[in-house]
Length: 63
Image (cartoon, rainbow, N blue to C red; front, top):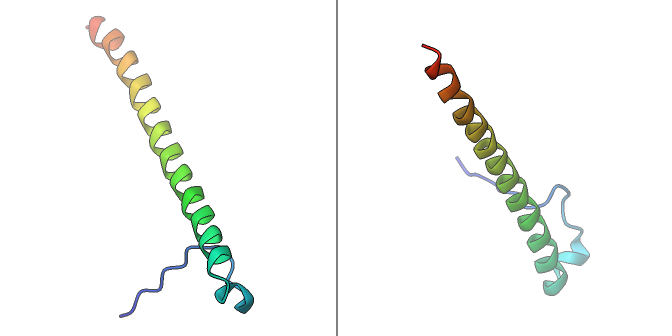
């Protein structure tokens, strides 16, 4: 089975395929966008864990 990975949301026009600098810029933008989204999700998960950890001692102290 062959995996095809698409870096961009839209297929590249053939004119861009022959323009190396513009293609690199587009792929770089798409890669940075994906990285920012992953980091944002990870930061949100860490924040949720921190909020949960802050609430836990209060619950344990009432036992």
